[in-house]
Length: 483
Picture (cartoon, rainbow, N blue to C red):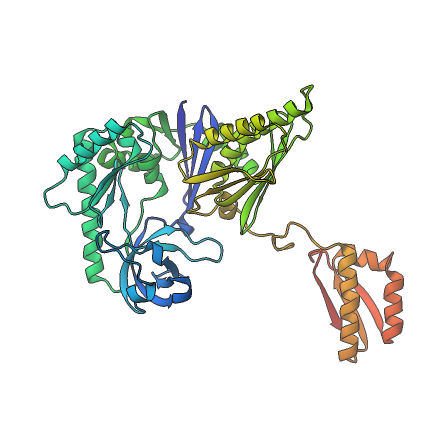
């Protein structure tokens, strides 16, 4: 299946779209004002240890302290023990840490003391000694050959370990040697800075998104990488020539008049990826709700009644939904706990087939995930590793009117709140008159259906009450002015 990668540049942000057979499968956005932190290495300082949580807060020079759990503290395998975190670390101590998860919502970045530095062909583990191979390279004989090749190419003074990446299956010895030298140099620079700088300090910053595309995104079926900026096209050609020479022939500079993302329908896909409802070609649809705790996905038949047998209609809708959900998870970069409510199926064979189709569609997802199958309630539980903000959290913010609830109080509810507040004010203050400032819908209600309620309250408190419509007020906003 042919793959294309599109890079759209503006001075403020870089956007990347990965297309399979012309259909957008992944979206990545990096803004200059809020670059991701995953992969960055810092010299941190322990600010506080929490024995009850077996965790520590670490200052790394960001607005919020980062979070280090005892399970993410690296220890040599031969001397590893089960000591509690308060016996391993001390407040005020400096240590080298790496970000493994970006700050999400109100949570700070998550850290590890096990450093890993990614190259094009290899991942360097300077604290380890073993040589591993990506699990996606399944053939046992091939895995062993790759291990032996790396061991043979390592310098005599090498004390670290390496993981062979998937794209290294057909790499030459020269490419491996180049990658090893590049990674060792980065680690040497990190160690030099750690020995001279004071904590907290940044020791290493991960590559820009556009550079990571050349290092991480390119697969054997990638046919071209299209770039719509002349300046960045030349920068990436230089980067590719030095670090990823095999990728250089794939680079293309787009010079057309029509915006690159418009030409390939990516802008429309971004808008659809922010919608709560996702249409299925059969006429069914998905409802996707993202909350702090989890993401829920509900599958519905909608207007699809095309098959004579209703069970087959449900089965076909669920099969289509399984493929669409897998794509939407990548597109929206949804992570954490995910609950899928497929339409209820009576047939065990149908359930098995839908689950197989779902796992097959998820197989092309490079993010680590687990699928637990159908529960007794007929729900599919799964998890998908969350290392950066979802697309919606990058591009959107909670609605200031409803505060992210997705709904607002009715005009009548607000009107009754105002009546109660007026009664409180009248008992506390001896004003000459009270004026209600509210949105047009609330004022119209007081002038019409609730006019008697307002008159009764005015008689009860013995004060006049006036109304003032404010078009700029949100549906729930109001003020009571004492005259």
